[in-house]
Image 1: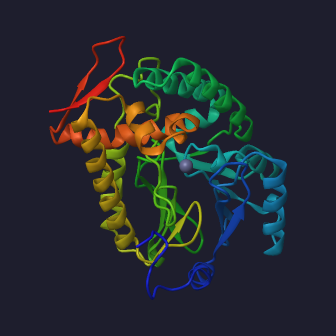
Image 2 (image 1 turned 30 degrees about the vertical axis):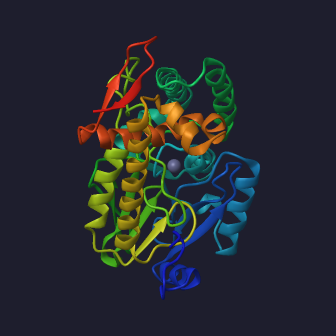
Length: 345
Ligand SMILES: [Zn+2]
């Protein structure tokens, strides 16, 4: 069964209509990234609220303006702008929108310094990624090339001042609804989902996506300084704990940051758990056959993609190795040149 099959479930159009009945409208904004369009959500309430904005590009701004106009609004009408997490496809336009509209900008309080000092924060992120990549066997020339790619992506982000910092569990009160901010780290350290409580609608951003499994990307912990790579963060473990919490929620509808709405989050989350289990077992098999670095495992699993998407793929591998380390089935060995190899326990 593929991820997209959901026998007898309501159609995408039906689910979007259900959201629209609740005053929540999906605006799919173009991005230059492989993920394709990003979903911003317009909530027709008071204040007029936009959840995520799309990347900082003329094309994204143009399409966002058109989408707002199609519903009878302008950027200047936005009163509240909510940022779900630290990825530029979601918040890149926030600064421009906030300046033009004067909207309040709400985000998790731990994310506020990152968004304010965006350049410096991403500089530290790059150093973090570089350290992790070298430690886990990615060749130095590949690391240098990837750093240049990463730097060129930064233009789609932009620093923005958070004027309404949110604690985990805090409520945002609008005229017709309450949105509760819930911290669900894993895909990124700042992932925040927003629950429209009376309607049981969850705006999940990249925490839960129907057609792709959300990559639990290794990332510098929020607010971490120069010694951030050791001990290494455990993104998949964090992510699975966050998924458990979402699984327990009674939800009528989940509106994700990319792709279609989700009507049965429990089934989807269970599918994700099974997929991660299968992947961990496959990786265990590779390690049992011979000691390997995370990068060697990634090459074994994904071939050339392990080079072009080196950080993403070692994040995947290390996440699953963390599951195996916790179970005591794999051990870490960093004897030679500070490159880490994993072997079966
Ligand atoms: Zn993301």
